[in-house]
Every structure is written in C-alpha cells, then in structure tokens.
Length: 116
Length: 116
Length: 116
Length: 116
Image 1 (spheres, rainbow over the protein chains, first blue to last red):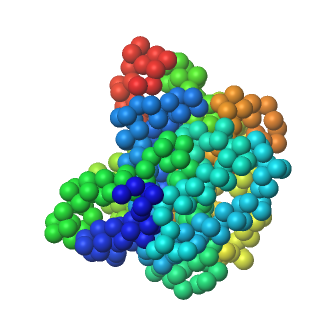
Image 2: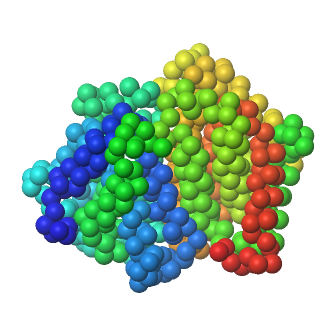
Image 3: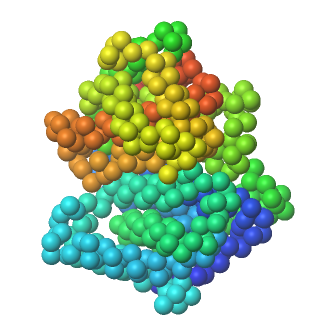
C-alpha cells in the first residue's frame, strides 16, 4: 500500500490507535506534540548538519542513510498527524488552503528561480 | 475532499507541482528542506510557548487560533512531503514501518499511561 | 572560576581554540552553526518534552538530571559563541542593545505578569 | 563594555532583572524557556535557510544583515542565561566541563579536518 493507494485518514487512524492503546492522549497536549515534532525534525537535520548541498542530495544514493532519513521523516509526520488528531484538523483541507495562499503570495512567473 | 478521500500521493503531487512551477528544486536540497521544516515547526510551537497544558488544549475551541495552527501544521507537512519528493521516499510505507518498530519498542501493556 | 570572575571573552577564546585546533572552521559556516544550535536546543528540550510545568521545575532538585541539562545548555552556548566568533559579533554589546529594545517594547508596568 | 571586560554574571544579572521587573518568572519554567530558545534559534536559522555556504559567510560583510543576525543571537543567549538563572547553573563551569569532555571525545590530531 503505497502513497498512491493510501488515504491520509488511514495513516491518521494508525497513529490514533497507537496513542489510544497506550493511554498516551494524556501527554498529547498540542504544546507537547509541537515540542516532540521539533525534536524529531532536529534528529532529521542531524543527518545533514555538516554536509555540503551536494553531499546532502547524495544521501538519496546511500540505502542505509536513506532508510535512516525516511525513519526520521516518518517520526515527524506521525507527530504532525497526532496533532491533527488531537485538534481535529483535516490535513488535506489545511494543505490545500495553504497552498492556494502560497500560489497567490508567490506567483510562478514572478518568483521563478527566486525565493524572495 | 477530506483526509478520508485524499490519497497521500495527491498532496505530494500538489507540492511537487508548486515547487516545479517556480523552479525551486534547485533550493530544495534535503539539507535546506530539513531547515525549513524546523523553522515551520518553531512557528507552530510559538502558538503554545507560554501556555499551560490546559490552555494549549483549549486552542481547539478558538476558531481563529485553530485556523492559524492548522496553517502552520500544513506548512510543516508541505515541507515533509517536499523532502519525500526530493528523496523519493514513500511516506505511507515509511510510517507503517516506523509504527511497527514503535509497537515493538513500546508494548501497549508495559507502557500504558507511561512514556518511559 | 565562576560566572562572577569569567569574562565572556575567555569562554569565546576557549571555543575558538577548540575549533581551530581541529581545523573545523571550514565546517563552521554561519548556516551550519545555526543548524547545530537548533539540534542542541532540541536535545535540551528533550529533557522537558513530556513533563508538566512543575515537573520541569523539579529538575533543579535532581543532581543527575540537572547535570545533564547543564551539559546540553553548555552545548548551545558553545555554538552561540562559535557563531559570534565566525561573524565577529560582540555578544555583550548585542545583548545590551537587544535588552534595551525589549525594555521599550515591554514596559515593566504594562506587561507585569502578562506576556502579551 | 565589550566581551573582554564583561563577566558572564553581569549579563545574567541584566536578564534576571528584566524578567523579575515584569513578574515573568511564573512563565519561566525550564520547559517553556527551552521552547523559547528553540523558537529564537529558528529565527536565526531563517537568515541562512536558503543560502549557499558561501552566501551564509558573506553575511558578515553586510551591516544590516549582520545586525539582524546579532539580534537573533542575542535573543538565544538571553534565554540561555534565563534558563541558567532559573536552574542556578554556573555557565562558565558547565562550558569548561563540556569542553574538556569534547577534547577527550575529539582528540585534535585524530579529528583534524574531520568531524566524524
């Protein structure tokens, strides 16, 4: 079941059950989950911290490094979905709305090849 | 189209097109994207920084605050998917594998109501 | 030699020598150091992540936890001084200027017991 | 009064007074301060996020950018000292101990020009 066949809701449900089965909702205040996300992102950054831009791209070619990065990325998204679960946010709608805002803020022709 | 009907791949495709239309892949080294994620998570944390645990939960009841938090959360996930796009990581598989690892690391009966 | 007798410059010099002796200035771009700081702060946050406010204060009474926190804090400040070294920023002046700005932004009478 | 003439204790005292005058110690749990540090470091990173290594070094030559970076750096150190104040940690001792540990972990001859 790849990203092609997996609805976002299925992954959210997987996270929801994991948390509920351990009675961890008591720890899952939005404040705590946001901290947990920051800590997981830092573990992700750790893989790239001292690398040159090219070295950081080359991680895609090293199976072991790529698997480690994928695992850290999964951790971040698990907590992102845990926060969505606690606050009852529809991720797909939130992303579509934000992307529409971004499209207006950064018109493609004006920002082509430039980020500011 | 809610999380129920949206495959993860659709959201990834939306991010992919946004980046490609602006020629921003040149900036999207894994290193840079991981930094961008950390910055977006910090903006999310900013909403909860000085709140008590209860106050942070109460954000769910304030429409304006909740919308702002949803927007920051969307930013984090957009970059998470941008990283998955650059490194060709299947998010659903990575999450399922990590969750299986977590289930074994934290057996439900042993960790019930305790996180360590 | 406690904080009472230690000029900021002495600590900066200690960091400068450590970096120079290892030929690490080549890695110490401002970008890389700022990432390193974020990673060290995350390790600091990890100690407090799931704690209640009171539990996080109680860390002061546990010698082992306090020593661990002090070590993470030292890591953050080491990198902060490493960045000051690379960019030739006088930390004392920068802090005095920022504090003056903060005093004007947050007049004591108006913000007493309130942060916004 | 530059870093040469400023004892660390003076800067800590400046932070202590600022916080006390506003009655903000109630918000300054170690948990909250660690979050605040993470947020300020993210604002620092924001200056370097999309820059190449060389561009990030060049910030030293742009007065306006350098002043902005110095201000963010000051914010981080202010919170670092606020945490030291709350937990009664001597920063100079903690840094000297950590640096001694680092010297043993990374012998200069073995790690010259290499970080791992």
